[in-house]
Length: 521
Picture 1 (cartoon, one colour):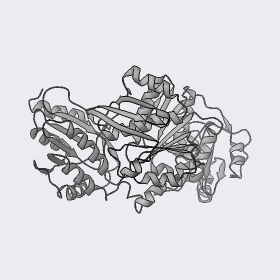
Picture 2 (cartoon, rainbow, N blue to C red):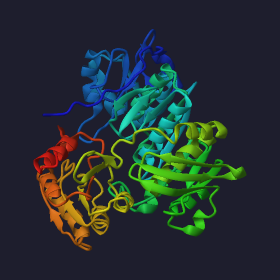
Picture 3 (cartoon, helix red, strand yellow):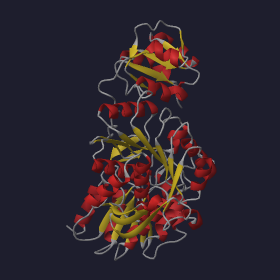
Picture 4 (cartoon, rainbow, N blue to C red):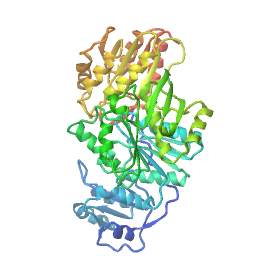
């Protein structure tokens, strides 16, 4: 059974924009009379196309989008923006054609104009980095709700619009979807938006047309080597976000050496922050303006101290585990301060509520509450993510820790051995299984993970089990009271992607069923 794709969110009452003005503003060649034509939306996809939209036809991997011009017209498109090749293909559709040299590269700024975001935006917070992006924006959104400030949030897990929650598609939406989402948020009275920004979104122009009031950088760790030649190129992909063309100011973590590079390249005001307990370069961390320290930790309850300029200090809690989550909370708070939220108001609110109140979807999520081993689901998908979370859970587990894990297919293959090694050396038992094979052979993915894990096999055994339904049953059979299972991969997700199809999949129910069958109730 194929899983349905979450909807694109759009303003319910868009202001019509003259197509002729679009053509003039963006220097589009128009051979047709555009008099009287108005647009209320813009999209790359005929699946999302609505009456009154401009359809943008670009050259894809397998076909040219202009081939769908006829379908776009039938669905109510008022015009098509495409390149010269697409103009020839779309000629018979009867749609007015506007020609651009690079319609893909112009989509974001056209979308911003169509949805009215070029004139007025909420306060925009953008968070990038390898790990911690999702948690940081969820913590910001939760804290804004506690402060009583109408907020919006977009992460790899969810979209939040002033209390409304929608499952996410991409980590960062396509630019036309993103600007529609921002316009919808404005319509709903949102004052501050927290946006998770992937490196792909930066280099592929999905966040063009957005200027961040505060940009945040969390860290740089091994990931995305399927898209970049090396780590230096990966970091360079993020650097444009820290320029005056994209942001007004920034908060940069110095927990990884890449923070220094971001700081050196930024041409905007920058505030720095560090967490000495996890910083890779202690001397660099010691230069930070703000310092975060984990004071004590329990599962999903970490106490932290944040200190900064002018003697500012607060002690609070975050509903997550480990010093890396304290770092995310510190980033979330300091970015809000840099955005203009009053420090005393923040401090008083956290004291009143006993910490940040929010749910971090799929981040060390405790599935079990009764007898037997504790079971956690986590969205970890990098070596560093495995390392930090496994260490945090192991420190809170009186018995043995079993790590169950898989990896995404059709993604960076070079990080798989590192993931396997991190899981194995931080566990007492390790089980490799399948996650999202996508278009890859699942056995080959497991082999990559096993190559790393076998370098440091845990004392209790290293297993390679497919499918995950069997791996879960084996995991439960190997642990007991006082032990814990940490399952990396599924996190908040309720599907597996196999051969391009999202197949419904409920790891929580599978795990609970395995526990019941094992007699744990």
